[in-house]
Length: 133
Image (tube, rainbow, N blue to C red):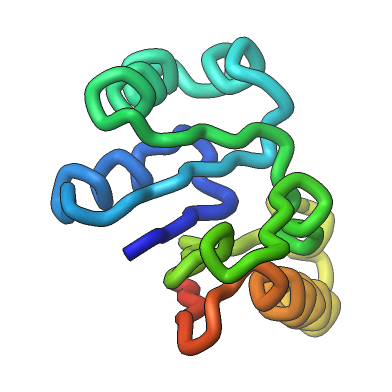
């Protein structure tokens, strides 16, 4: 089974998934553009990414926008595609959205719609797209 996580800020979910299910391949992705930016943002990220890369020999992909996955990850053949695409707690992280609950809901609806559409581009036939709200 081949899985990819998107929007995994500090990569801790990807690592927990790999530890719980060592038999599956887990590619971890984050919106942050580089390893150094990841480590500046999250204090645990260096240890987390090191374990994913060195102990588990998994991939970490930087700069992945969950609404435009295909811009960073090309999966032209079925072998390159994933069985599972996971996005935990998708949010826009915009405090201004709290001013209008309706606008907040609309923006998140658009985020999820674009995520589903984008995730489909790297999904194997019969694969699954997951979100955790």
